[in-house]
Length: 411
Image (cartoon, rainbow, N blue to C red; front, top):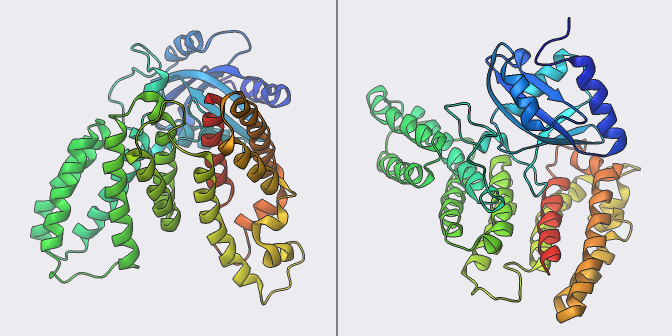
């Protein structure tokens, strides 16, 4: 008898249909106490809200949401009306249990950007996908990026408390950690940041206490500083008009993702560009950020990783990646980089109707580059290289291209 909340045969059939057609399908998801009990309903005609009503009647479902999904390659891109924390983790395990391991659930926002569900606040009630609705402007706020930065600071503070080696002091400071976690879960980012400021100040005074040093003290200190700086910039973004804040919020989320992955140079470069854009005077006929600057910042971060791979390849004889050792990333872009830069320069210098035409040309090149990043096997080899060198390419460049597309569309 099919699972009332997750009919594996029906789900698999519709995922394959979505992949073949490229069309969006309505869905509803139900969060359960255990991943194997979660629910997923997909339909060709029923609206997601109706599916959610059916799903809520299934036993074991605690929270629910609805929206649309599409399938690209084997990625199931879920775009709910209101993101629900736990959707990706539970569906991964459910897909594995049902023998659907080739499908990978991915949570995305209205702009198509990937959302890190760990940065979402915990919900205390089953209100996902119901009124009041969240406006597109609210969906593009920088809260997700700021929350991720605060989460990184909480984790660092927790490790510092454990490392004190003094049970009495740890017992006194532990409630501060719990309070910070609670404030973050409630979405009160300003109060959480203030609480962490006090906690970090207290830990700084205890610096003389004997404790084992972290694996990389300099890196940990830099990550904490960048996290605090990102939180401060995220607060400034809230005061900007929605149309100006939207592309900057996406940049903040990208920076938060870099911090979480340990890519500190990329996070630092991103912060420089973000601060420059926030502090620049608003202009009525120009976008908040220059697409050229967005691309150059992302490209510089990627080039640093590829440069590390080039060094590792100097003494190796690798037939597929040899071209990267000689020419870097430009050696495998099949002209995409040259065409994109040409379109960027033309849009930068164009005005009036010519700018609109240049923006359309840029959008075409962005689409071509996105397809290249998605399909090219050499890019995958760069990221999953056999030398253990971190060289992220797809995520930073895809995020930058999507930001650039939003600006080009508004031109």
